[in-house]
Image (cartoon, rainbow, N blue to C red):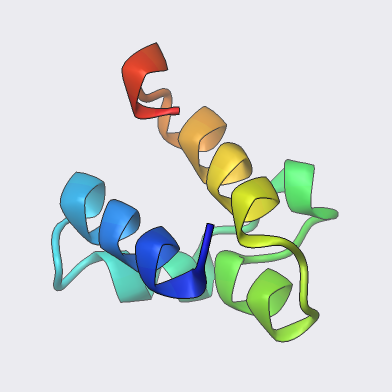
Length: 64
């Protein structure tokens, strides 16, 4: 997964206006107590970040 796809998925589920704020402020335990933005800055794989977000947002299995 590329970063553009990660952002597109977050935009789809959270809305284009809210997704960036969520990515900057919500700390995810699965990312070592980091936000999506921090995890990206550290070079974590986008698939790992998406799975952490997917779990946190309690999305349907088909969105995994």
